[in-house]
Image (cartoon, rainbow, N blue to C red; front, side, top):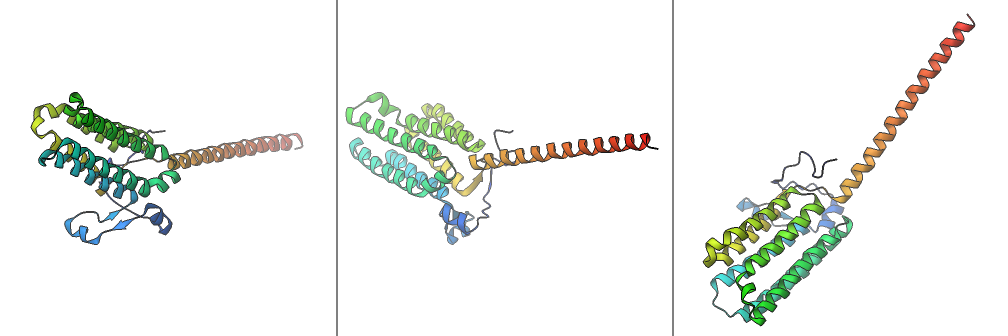
Amino acid sequence: MYFFKPKQPILQQKKLTLNAEETALMKCLEVKILESFYLCGIYTCIDQAMLIWGLVSGIIFISAQFLAISWIEQAIFWSIITFIGIIAMWWLTHTWTFVEKISNLLYCWGFLMISGVIITDYAIASGWGFMLMHLCDLWLTLSAIGYIVTGFMLRSRAFFLAAFVHLLTIFILPWFMAWQFAITGLVMMSNLIIFSEGQWDMLLPRELNNHHTTKKIRHYSSSSSYSLSYNQIFAQVFKNIILQVFT
């Protein structure tokens, strides 16, 4: 059994074939006008959550790069929109994660984001110089951890690749210290927008259970057919012996 779904591209053009029940579960949102710009235009609850986090990431880090406001004001602003993002993520995805038996993934992302806010606010309030110099590293690391966990739980190569991009960015940032917030925002935002626009590989626990069930049924059917064949052979041999004795 493969860990990832075999022969499935890491990322491809989105192909949604959902029935009415699945459409309601996924809370699909259709924005026709975006199709004119060669964008998907159809977004599931997961896609919408990613777009929201992409917007939140872009606003936080690009504003930190270009707006001349105090750290305290930024911390308040960042905390508010981050918690709005957490609430939106929960509202959009909690039903789907429950049905697919991956609720722990939602809790994981919530924990990572809340931890990031607490550490960031504490660093700003206490004047923790080291952390203030590495806020971008902190959020890139938290995002990478989230992507790694997502990669394991969804068995997705795409999320492992996203984690690698975030970790690689940490090593690149020292060469672009003057632009570290803008670069961090662009990396985090672009990853989330790409995920929301495309269809990434995954193997959900429900699909995995269905695969194991099908495999067991096939094995049972195969064993039954072998048993039937042996019984037929035995019957034919017994018949031949009886014919030889009485003829």
